[in-house]
Length: 139
Image (cartoon, rainbow, N blue to C red; front, side, top):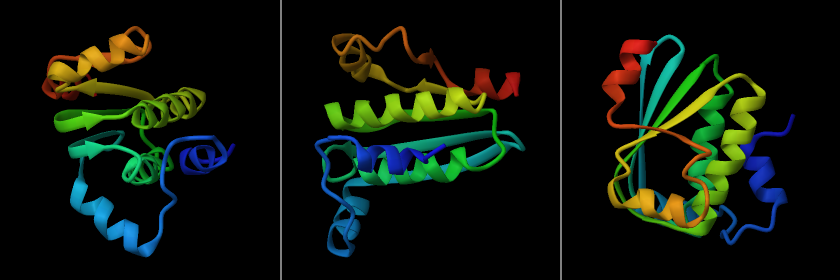
C-alpha cells in the first residue's frame, strides 16, 4: 500500500510540492510536535496554518507515525488557526490509510474548526474527543 504522502502527491490536491525553499517556509507556518504517550499511542500537536503550503508537511508527519507500530494517533488541533480543503483532504487520505492498517485517528482541540469538518460533511467520519487525556486512559 502506498504511503499517505504518495497518495497526496498522486491526487489533485491544491498543494505546493515540497522543495527546499518551501520546506523552510512551511515549517515556519505549521509546527508539528509528536509525543509517544504509550508504546502504541502517539499525539501530534499541530500549531499554525494547514494550507496549500503545509499540507505536504502534514502528510509527511502522518506518514512517519503511520509507518510505526501504533494503534492510535491523536491529532491535537488546539493551536491550528486555519484548515484548508487540502488539509481536510490529507486528513481523509490519512484516515483511509490508517483504517486499512487497523489504526484509529482521533481529533481533539478543534474548537471552531469543528465547523469546517461539519461544512465539509466530515463531522461523522472522524472520532472527536474533548481532550487527549481520556484517550491516554484507554491506551
